[in-house]
Image 1: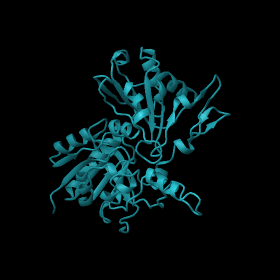
Image 2: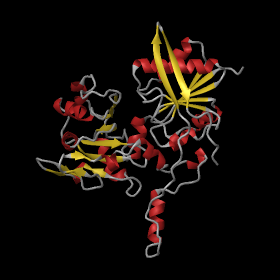
Image 3: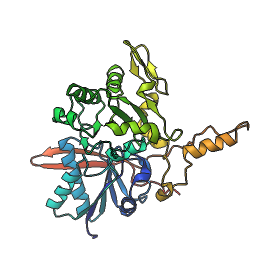
Length: 370
């Protein structure tokens, strides 16, 4: 029997090209991959075709679900198999990686943690917002909030946070964003301070709305975004005006909104339902399946074994060279829908003091792709 081992790997904030070389090698060697639902499907294609793939749901599971995942990792490892626990973002940044590692330690199962690009760092970077900058403040504060589906802000000292000069990055749940913005404003954060809200970060469907803190609060109140987001508050958000690359990723600003007392109307690509006064989710809220079908942003595509995908800027240059010719490119690359590798549903129940994980395989293997 092989020596049991578990790799706890950070997949990064979305774009599959952002995984580390070490993380990719762990995937290639894995017998079992236990992954979050938010992990990009293209990463699973890096693994061997005979590797077992188990989808355990959201990146922030409930306590009983998290216990079931811990027992599942230990059970698979004791079978003498190499297990990869693939997690969105970084395993130790607002994630359960620490709890899983401690459980494995208590069970006497060897493990290794492979860091990933934290969402709080990578997503603002893709949107043209550096989380630190000389003159932008000496403090960087990360606030957790994405795991809670309530409409209340996280339980922290908002008065002290509002007075702290520096950058605040918040993992904002779809129903918490408005509460977080209101909490900052009500505790004295300057209303004119720069801020940015980023959804679907690092994916082709990434959308960013930037403006003043007051403008974003009004926008979210009148037209709820309805998606988990990364909120950046601080002077560094104002640098997006200079660091964002037009044509590479779509730009939406709160200052491009026409504000009145009845509705907000977005002028740059996000539809607004005039009757209900709510954002339509068509472009801003692409489903996870749609995001995965649209492929990569660019970057190290060759690392993942996929053919090189031209960046949007390159495509635009080609389009301009072909203006006037029939069938000219329109500045987009369509990557054909790829079937998602076989998924395994995980169920669990509490019997006495032991939590047993039950799972049934829908597909035992996936045809190898070239």
